[in-house]
Length: 351
Figure 1: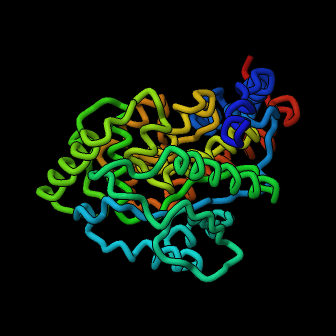
Figure 2 (figure 1 turned 180 degrees about the vertical axis):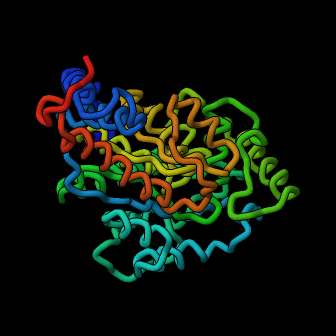
């Protein structure tokens, strides 16, 4: 069996016994039942993921998957392609938004280079697993081969496995890649079976006329390649990106290891769509974080049956929304574990 096949086979349903115990404990904590809303729901989900009725978060890691895209040659981005490599360097130097927010919540940041055109100097927080130096232009044919799609996913599985072995009990997805809203929109259009215009947004800040052009580019790529919506590897290989594949891999790898994965915005949710298509049970290990300003994000979340809980006009990527959400997930687990019960505090529960 391949690493991808073994990983998918290892994903199991959430532990119902742990979830029941967590739900009972939530009902005995010194508060009106349900009064902490989503924190209660997240704590019960994490209990099921970890198979532990009182799970503790011992380490947090944001994994930023990076790659370039041949479709940028079609003029779909407001930024030149070399910005991908420059921003990878900025992240490794600790100067990007994701670094600031990760420091704020006490998380490590790892960059996984699966397809950046340029090379970065060796760095402890950089993992290089280049599948290629950028994908091919998907308007002229497949963005990558099916074999490369599997390699990208397996690169994500390997990195998340390494981070879990180093102590991460909570991981977050991130992305870096100029032009990557275009393949993400293409994945959304293919899998959700909707017109490209319905899932195509401004990306890095293009205007309304450029947005229409971008949707036309995506429709052309879909027409040229004819991705099969029922075959996530076919969709990824024909209109995806190396970093999107890696994101799907880290989601699958986290699920196989019973580790919750906090999913960032538009690009990461495209990866989540691929992961869900490969292993439907992986959806239960995902925690959606924020509603991206990017058109199409809600369409993908609805397809997955996930509800994001932050709506703060984010559209940066990098894992920034997920980094903020890490503190919510950790807080949920601490409430479940550390808060007194009515019995232990000697407080009347009103019954």
